Image 1 (cartoon, rainbow, N blue to C red):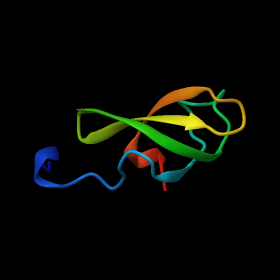
Image 2 (cartoon, rainbow, N blue to C red; image 1 turned 120 degrees about the vertical axis):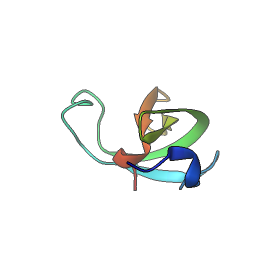
Image 3 (spheres, helix red, strand yellow; image 1 turned 180 degrees about the horizontal axis):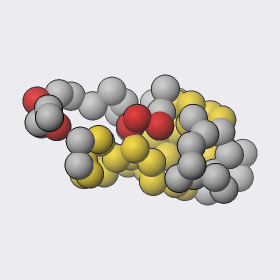
Length: 67
């Protein structure tokens, strides 16, 4: 298992990202979002707060869900 602190984040505040659909975010539509906050890592994955440009809602997601 890799130590999360050994690798850097892929995204920074202000980056535009795509959210991939998964079983954990069925109510969160896939699409383009903006990173609004860097959250602490959970387990082996970084965590981010992203904002939907269509409706202004924010969601907390894992880095592995973003591209």
